Image (cartoon, rainbow, N blue to C red; front, side, top):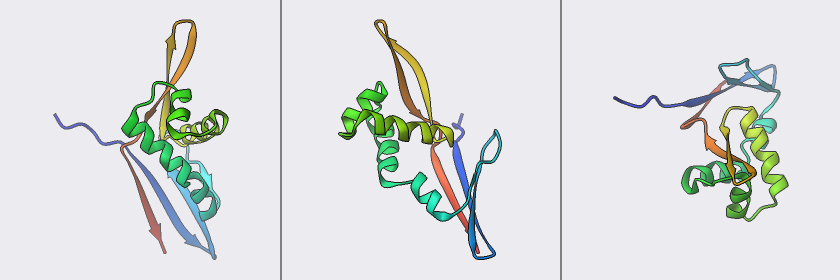
Length: 116
């Protein structure tokens, strides 16, 4: 049985000289007002986070920060934003008494469509 592919759709429409971006999600449609916001959401650092989650499969956010060589606080901030827009999910776990959050991809692909 073929596995269903999870895709996040991004639609950019040109209206009255501005870009309007929409993320189609199951719960509501978050609105990004212009292309600059889309760029900040899909920055190089956040793309590296998505790639590291896919290839390295980190055990926790701390492990992800170590893999990327970045500060834990900034990685956590980026993870929360990616989670908000449905790109990743945080799975709860534990190591002894310590609670962990394991980041996993929530999508297999991102489809960006530009209508002019």
